[in-house]
Image (cartoon, rainbow, N blue to C red):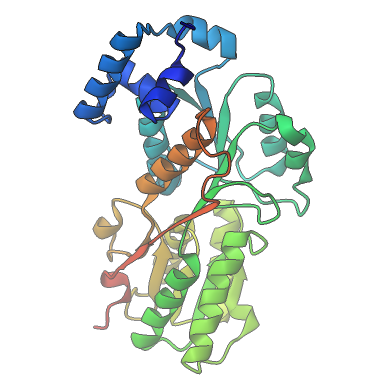
Length: 337
């Protein structure tokens, strides 16, 4: 009889090789009945796992690279936690790379990772450049890649996103329902897919409720706290909005600081809503109304997509896009006195 390897054992049981591996590593996420069936079949076929030899033969690093724009944002910390949990359950470690929203850093990291340092990449993109074709230049040798949250629309690879258009539409609508008629939209990068999608939700909500659109109420901000302080204070004093919708949580913080310095009362004079996964949002003064993304779940789903690709027996073209739902949590920053 031919020697039994993990692929043949998986075929005999009609299971994936990753499920077989998890059974032998005694992972907690595998059903006890499935595990017992795997071990019984392995004994019947006289199969003995050799993880060390397998890793050498396949030249696997057992490492996943996670590339993010920043770590200060609580959203990315939670997403990384979700990725790490799934990676650990599959016997992998993670390496974290931070681009600081710099495209050249992203390119350098990706090229470095193709030297065998990682088996796959999970990335939220920097988005600074229009041409992302460097990813396609690897051809068939490109490492398995999954995008999450921030994506490049021109790169064909699986991704995990949230319902950003609908969330932005509802956030803007909430401000309108609270009586706001001059709503400023604060954004860092309008060229990113996520920035365009969120802005379109804002514009469509204004149109639905016949609130006049003013182009100068779309305020371009930056990644610098000092620059944002100046930009937001100018917007507040010159444009005099009565509502602010910020596309990322650091702009909500900057708005709070600017209002404090200018003696503008939130929510009496200005109502504020923001995308944010910040756990202390209820403790801010006033508590911040947020569009909260399921960050940990996003990380978990991205990791599961990647391991689906890494699994030798799996379909090499997994579901191209997973869309999760964010929720609006109404707090005091948008209340009516």
